[in-house]
Length: 380
Image (cartoon, rainbow, N blue to C red; front, side):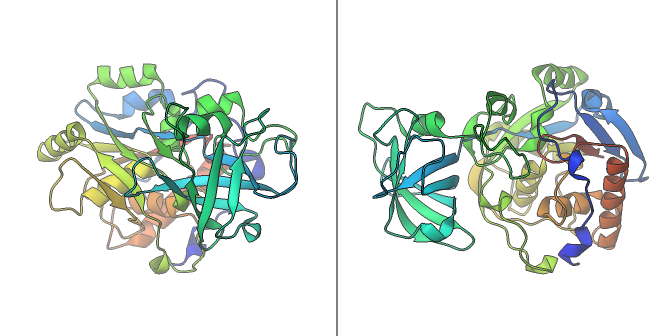
C-alpha cells in the first residue's frame, strides 16, 4: 500500500481549535466492524456500548509543558520581550537515559534549526527575570530539526528541572491548533483540557487525545456498568510531530517511545484474555503498547520501548475494541485505525482502508470535529 492511499480532503472549518465547552460532551461515531454500520451518538453514551466484564485500558501519561523558547548565548537581545531577536523554539520530545544522576538530556525539535548547532548554548528565561531559568548545551544535530540538549545541573535546594519547565513552558499543541500570534502559545484552558483527568506519569510531548473525552462521572458510570478499568503509560514522543516522509507503508519506521506496564494491569490483561473478555483500548498509544506487548513471551509487569507500526494486514492479538479521535490524512494513526477496522486481516488489508475512509467521509458529511480537540470514534 502507498501512503497516498490514505489521503482524504478535510474542510478546514472541521479542524477543532478548542475543546468542547464541557469535557465529555463530544460526539462519537460508532462503527460496527462486523456489519460496517455507522451510528451517530455522543461520548456520554460510551457505557451503553461496553459490556459488563469488558476491560478498558487507559494511557495515564501526563503532558509536559514541553514547548519552550530560548535565546542563543551571546546575542545582545532582551530575553523577556514578546518576540526577542534570535528566539529559538524548542519542543522537548524525549528524555535520554543517562548514567549520571540528575542529568537532564533531551531529544528535541528546534525551530529555526539552521541557526542551532552543536556546541552552542541556549538560555531559557522566565518572564520578568534577567537570569535564565534553564541553560542547555546543544550536543548533537539530527535530521528534520532534531537536536540533543544537555541541561545544566540545578543547584540543590532550588526548584528542580520539571518545576522550572512547568513555570516557563507551554503546552505542546499541534501545529493545526492555532492561537493568535499576539497571544501566548497556549491558554489556561489548554493547560487543563490538553490533559486527561487521570493523567499521572509526566513525560509526554503530546496528549493521548482519545482520553481527553473522559470525565470522572463517565469513568464512574463505566465502573457501575461492570467495566474493569486499568492503566498503562506510554510517553508520546518525536513520532507524533514528524510527518511520514516515505511513499510506501513498508518503508515506514517509527521513533521508539517509552512505556510501562504496571503489575495490576498485567494481571488484568492475563485474566481478561484467559476468560475471553473484550479488551478495549482508549487511543492509538494504548493500542500500540498492547500489541507490542502481545509479541513478547508473556504478559508481565515491565518497562520498555516500542516502535511498532500497525498497518492494514496486522492481526490484533489483544485489542478487541478501539476508541480514537479522527486523525490526519496520510498519518500512521489513520493507518492504525484502518488496520483495526478490518475484519478480514491479514487476508484483505484493503477492506480496512476502505472501511475507515468511508467512516471518515460520513464524519465529514455530518460535521464531526477533527483531530486533538475534536470528536471521537468507537470501533467494535
